[in-house]
Length: 482
Image 1 (tube, rainbow, N blue to C red):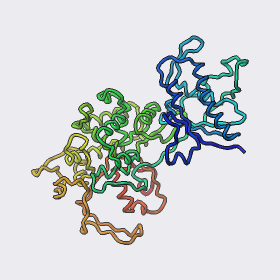
Image 2 (cartoon, rainbow, N blue to C red):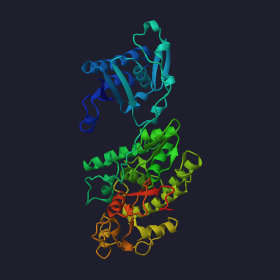
Image 3 (cartoon, rainbow, N blue to C red):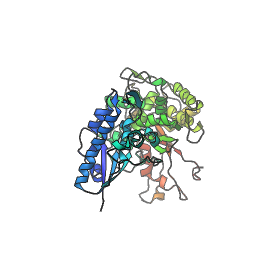
Image 4 (cartoon, helix red, strand yellow):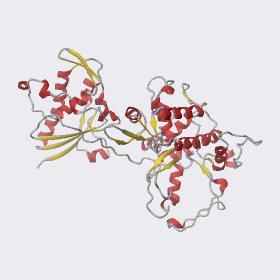
């Protein structure tokens, strides 16, 4: 009877498994740190033959140790964070200097073709770079053709004729995940929204690790910055990252998509031989930073500055007109309308969040009436004698004192039935208390197959949606929406 073992392969300083779920999934762990340091982190020219021999010996030793423990065996090797294998390396072969993209990746694939009577191996490579699917088997080195067959010490299978399709899985990490978390009830609206977004940021917030330093690194990653902080305005990937975070700019070239996935916060949603489509998941941390970058008075660490809203609109127009991205439905109108909605709301938020540093924009909600007036007025504000924007109702005492919580309905404002049935909840809301709280717009592909919107009328659902700070485009072809 053959034994199947799952092996997690990582470039780490330790081979100890991580606690938790990984121990339940994987049987063994392989540490590739030493071999990667020796080969992959060197900028010097390496010897091709010696490199191939050393890598093969390293991997063979691990497999031999496993076979001695349980023979025969079937191994499934999972190369995690495999983009570190894609580095372009310089090497010498037959006294000639050459270079090759993904040299380590190709050599590992050649090693996998070794015939082993007592062991069969299947390998998967996972990572945040779409480049993993770019390297064809036909371009791999072939020992059967490049080496004198009398000197071959191992049998090597012939090259395959094709690759398995790229596989991926997108998990809803945003506002619709039904999971409890440490939500700061007395915190700002921004703090209350964080648990509904990216789990990593929710964990960091619970540990008080989302301070200025880490937020600066997050913003630099969004702007694709690795050196100078002033170079982002001429970077197409940076523009698409900020605009996409707020309104989903659509699809773009595979290379740009790969950069936004590998070096930013985009998520892969589909991949084949020719395309790689992405989206930006609900994420109030990134959305708030993108909102700050659309304020020309915003500064961070003195070097990183935002830009005015008209400039961002022009960038979005240029990106579409130059064909650098394509909106989801083929019409950029809905994207520009969503951006207009958010920017008008930003104008009102700026009034409620006067600081110019990271304390800015921690209150998301704005008066719906004031927002509608601003939308109708072309985004231009008019200030009345009381110093308030035209159309905005007078602020309550708690708001005037800087209360960052959203308005609480009184008994006269809301009447909710005690009946727990979904369609029996009747809500009355004073029009003066209605607020708009979305700071980003994402794609929503929830399907409604019933004859009503009962599921969407749940107060728990709506509260979950509202507190996350997310608005949704609706999917096409829905009779209920149409």
